[in-house]
Image 1 (cartoon, helix red, strand yellow):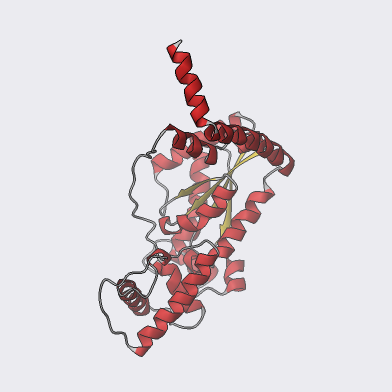
Image 2: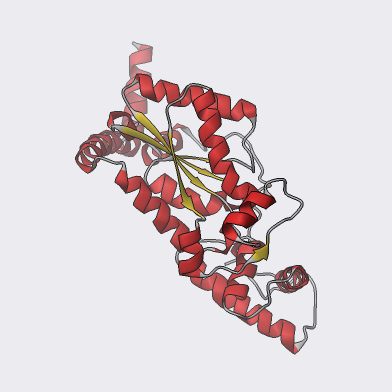
Length: 303
């Protein structure tokens, strides 16, 4: 794990205690294959009654974690920024490596034979990394709405869903968002605008819902009174709101997986998977015999 001291820093006993606990929490999640945003880490502190749910405490934790990483006390890979990423084209060392990459990444469209076509949509860009694992395990397309989804993106999604319908499939969108005035309303907005664009889609909100608030007791925040939807929300739910980030990543993973499995025909899935594995094995065999394949092609070109 990458740790390197770039600066020297002395920490107070209180800050040292925060660093020790941050290391413990992050290491446990890393062992399960999860990294965390700073906000997710903060909510783990709040949920354990180690910090009060106050903006000043969030900023204090951020400052301590930042200094601890610079001082070599916390692994840099523990905390991630999922909203800023370098993009570029892939490269290979030689033709053999291309075939090896193709073999390891070979996927057929196993959902094409299913009666349902499922996508997972999440409100926040920062949580895409949390849902990526379960979606990729089940070969599900996933999408960050970044709040209220843009008109262009929703129109494009509707055309995609209409295409699924034309192939005889029922489109399903699994939606996750904050439990606050806008976060709750976003599910309605997605459902109504997809219908406006003539796509017959089942939109299912699986988190964050009030039964989960009661079951898992995430730390509350005051509902934003400046939100134009605050009045209706407060009448129905009261003055508290809750962020999706406060749920355990493992819980979100399980919620999504359980919902996906409701819509998947396992016999069809297993059949398509067996076919895909056979074809993948063929690519792997070609990669393993690349020198012979290349020589045969070269000889054919010379004759």
